[in-house]
Image 1 (tube, helix red, strand yellow):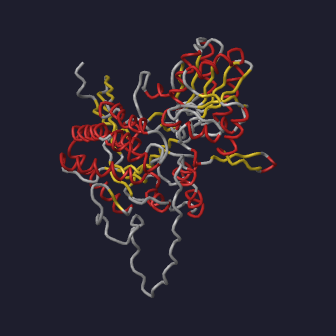
Image 2: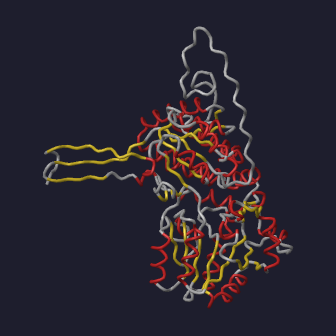
Image 3: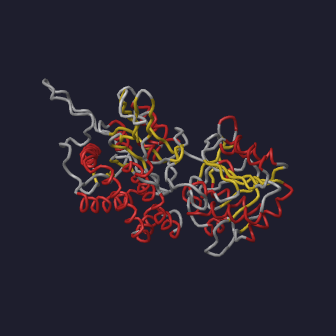
Length: 502
């Protein structure tokens, strides 16, 4: 960070908490104090990792800290203690985290919903109950090579302390899932949560550390900043104890992290698209699409955001959506909702630009329907409507339980328009088809990290499909669905002309 234009970085970061995929407003950055007059004999400069003027290690307990310098030093010390406990110690930490998420799912889900005010309670609870499916130390099997010249062993070593950014959309689940992957790799972690979910992060962090200290004698293995801000994000980026960054958020926070000078694993934005062709099982497609797009009111980054349907089956598909429980809006109702859901302004060259109304992110489908002038049952999972391909609901990662359906003349056109709407994020895409050639064509064309065939988007994370669960999908920097290996560095040990027994 010493070589970075600090004004530029601050400008980028100021957008982080405003543009992060969240409904809660970010706090205004405090005005930096005026520089003090330089004394005739200047005092020695403080360590650049200190942000509070106090000695590192003072203040904070059970992972909750006001200052980055204290949190990072405490996490570093905990990392050293964890090393002494070996892989068995890591495995026990993971058991503790999973058990606490399961036993507290209802209480923590309710707490997070009350704090963030986005999403659905049953799905907040569900996201905590499935944390148990995140892989742990079993993922880190060493790789051995043996030959005439001896043997070589490669193992997965920790970095030390990970600096991580949390989204407001899944505060505790993302924190817990990241902890499992990072601690399985042998690391400690310091979180800078979104301000809108900071209390939830504190709640879980404190509970995790209390249990870990009680059973293993280590405190502060998992740390969080109690009142996160632009400044605390910047200080995590440049702190000497932070070895690597892990980011879950939108374009602004990803850009800021990648300017930090540290290696960053970035789970950036997505706008997952679906194509339904003329060979699809329409009833199954409708059911799967509703399941994914309605989950937690479409807050999932992998959730279906726009659907492109071949014209020959368009009306039967729309009927299948209604049969499966979704509510269809007509054109005038869609227009009425759109004027509330998006702030549309003329940008450069007179082109219309649409900004999300963040007050509607993650609200219930019934709330959106009322804005459209329709009363629907309170338990309605999803509303949907026919739109053009350039509609804001298609082009924006809108995170609302309102699904735009685009009529296309043929499969190839559908894939072309889907790729345009996905914006090259290479995040997630879904196809419903019985035509293998169509599946192959779309998979190659989209080039997404996750590609689901004939299932819900959630199947891409092992929920309804084979695989494993992760709460961070590093699309921007290419690591893909994160695992414990993501947070390791490979170390090689070589024995020359010996130890091979064959």
